[in-house]
Amino acid sequence: MKLVFLDVDGVLNCRHTKERAPSGVIGVEPQKVLLLRQIVQETHACIVLTSSWQNVSDRDFHYLCDCFARHGISLSSLSGAYGNWHNRGQVIRAAVETLKPSAWVVLDDDQFPDFKEYRLGSHLVQTSFYKNGLEPKHVKRAIKMLEDKA
Image 1 (cartoon, rainbow, N blue to C red):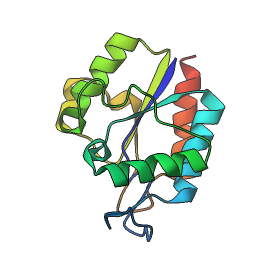
Image 2: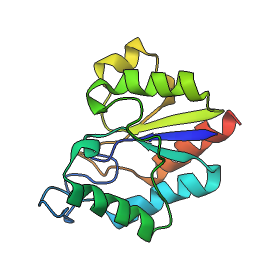
Image 3: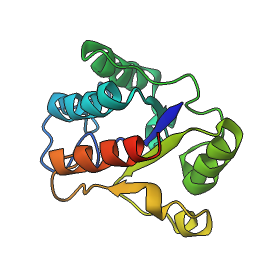
Image 4: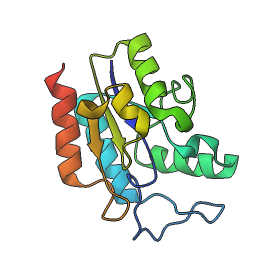
């Protein structure tokens, strides 16, 4: 099993994003979801949500899931099973130790304080909310990381 630990804000959107979720907060860009789909299709990885989007309104969460479904991808049922986004490094490390994936990558625009403690840096593909979020260069790097460990 291969896993993509996914943050949403700063990965599937950026400061330039015009789309809005039902509550009015910044939404996700379809072209960024297509980039995520490329990672999933080429590596057969499962998406585990490790984002503040775990705690949004039901309408916004369904919006996110619908955006994924429109592009042929889905969230793993593992999302939220290990905790929430407040202790992101700990959540990711617990999932990795329990599930023992053959390869995994973290797509996030932040490097949380506990990422260093849980030694996640070598698995991080860091995007930028202030630039363009997920870009083809990040996709290429994530795919390489997921395939190198196969």
